[in-house]
Image 1 (cartoon, rainbow, N blue to C red):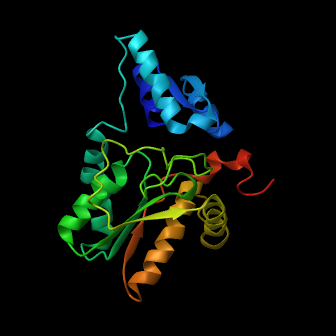
Image 2 (cartoon, one colour; image 1 turned 180 degrees about the vertical axis):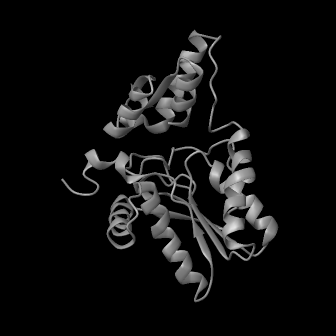
Length: 230
């Protein structure tokens, strides 16, 4: 969505590839910004979308592909911005950090900075239980959009986290609804997955510990999916 916004402002032609299982709202946002969409088979997951983009690039070598899963600028911006926002708000004494792994940029960039401030911080990576590649499982279809690409992203620092927490589709969805109903935060389903895992980490670390969890997505992008009811 960020690329769509920038392309609209700069007057760039933008072609996006994504699995056909992504929500209708996401497609509409891209189209509102004037981006062209290529939908790939849902069964192939994010890897199918990446492959389609690579084919497009090979056919048109003058095109530019940002390659968010491989681009070092991805975790670098989280080192410079997201981590500083967290430290300014909470200080360096953070006991736990939890984030979903999509491209791996957030947990790598933020995790590295937070660990440099507190070597004892407990960092947990979150992935879908149905595609638990980081846990040693096989890639598979799941409903937690935004995480669980089905492969190890090139930018992911696998040494920065202490554990990987797989979350089921149902637990992610139910927690997302609870966040809205109890906290007044309309978050996306990957946020629900991260929150579910963060509650586990908070229980593990015990009372009076400070655990940070990232909510990377908004819930209004999922209204058509039935996540919050028919």
